[in-house]
Length: 28
Image (cartoon, rainbow, N blue to C red; front, side, top):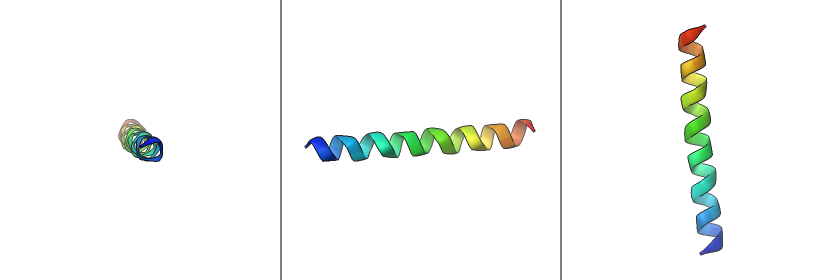
């Protein structure tokens, strides 16, 4: 249960960083 929550958090972070990367690429 603890590891599953951790994996979910990492997935969320990856999603957020991907979104941020796309956003910055669009702005520059």
